[in-house]
Length: 208
Image (cartoon, rainbow, N blue to C red; front, side):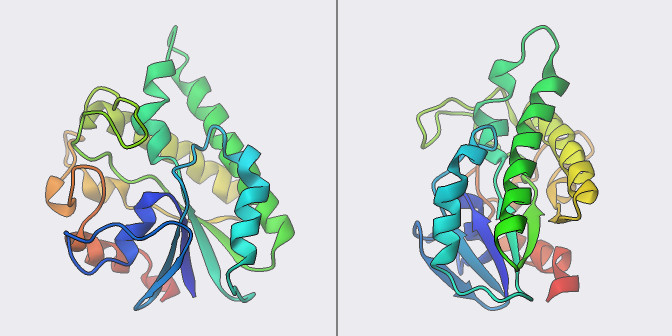
């Protein structure tokens, strides 16, 4: 089983169309080669404090030792938090601290369960620039958020390699040469739609 566990971006792996594009919270959804499990949109900044809650969710799912659980968090940090907290050019430090806190969770999960742990990196930021479902504003625009996404994912990749955590990243496939998001792959300006299915299949082909 390839399980994508995390925020609302887990839904893209299990949708059939661009109308019913959001899976329910806290329920395992199986669709073809992928399974999805959606939690609330926890931020990587604060996610280590949710470790026991996340472990309790995982204990409700039958996961074998040869299954892979890819965790999906971070887009909310990039859209709603990191950019707003950049002061005195400390962008790299903020991204570093957020990523390290996320990695701490993944290391903890590895120590508590016998399944394989992976990380599905934040996608290119959708073009929606308004107030989000969590009540927070979107930082600037998709291009500026994508600059943060690339830095975030670069740091996250280094940490995943360091701690032998599997990872998948399709973010660059969703941006053009100007770092503008390719909106055709999205269904609502934030989440990937059905047109992204082949990109996801191609990215995960080595585990399918």
